[in-house]
Length: 248
Image 1 (cartoon, rainbow, N blue to C red):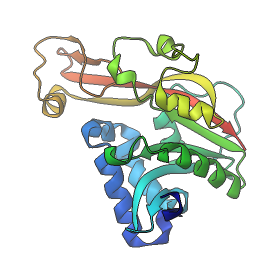
Image 2: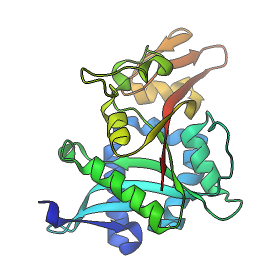
Image 3: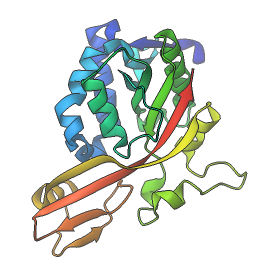
Image 4: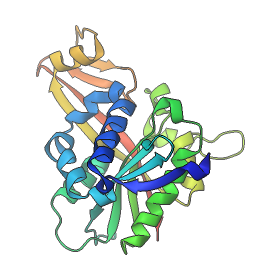
């Protein structure tokens, strides 16, 4: 099976570009409200097109169709202090407005359809991510990682969640654990990684729920509660991610 799989980029062909976009859309369809962070709807599609050779596809040569997709952007980063709390949104905005030669690869998303999960494709793509950074002469990778099991614990603070371990003393979260076992270093939370603030009607449409009063509401797939403010007429979702870095 493994011999049938090959890494290609979206620059390989228009057909692969379209297939990769379909894979990503399908993998994240239940969390479509995340497309409405300002950084996403203003810059994301343009970044993927501009940097097509930074968008990786794991292609099954038997079907000539991708089974996993990884998106990234080159960043010009010279800072040495703490990484910003804006996380994913910051990666997109920084990649969209470069201010110098790229030094770091900014990880954006790993998309694996449910039918292809639990096959080791995620870890294979993490290796390919590091190889891409090395091939481009970059000194490492920054990724605002979305912890895959955090949605089951929306009322637990991200500071507490990242300290959880499993029975073997490893990171509790399986996707975070995959990053760490692939050579990543846990830096810490970015608590405003993806911010979506929209009218309450927007959230009622997405969640198929009514919000009769202000307060915190858990919604399907969200890592933390949605904050509803009736006085302002808006709902605000601030998704926390976890900064993970790799050195090349």
